[in-house]
Length: 68
Image (cartoon, rainbow, N blue to C red; front, top):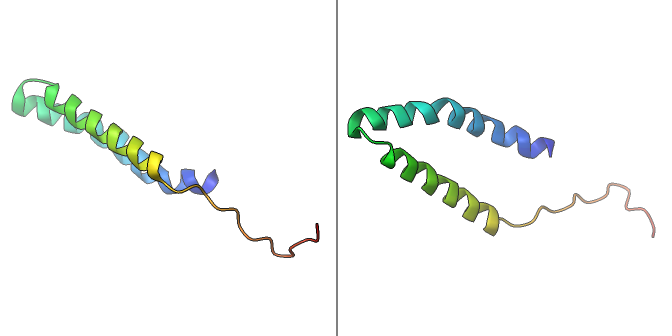
């Protein structure tokens, strides 16, 4: 869990900082939030598909390989 959080933290921080800026910029350009909602929804769907098709994690090999 720590490795997953450590890898994902920069992306989460970028999304939290950049999301409102992107939505505001799109609103200034189009005078509507539909473009921002469409982009954010597409990004969530793509992320869901990536998680759906990601391979399951593998357990690390035991160093001593204890006898069963």
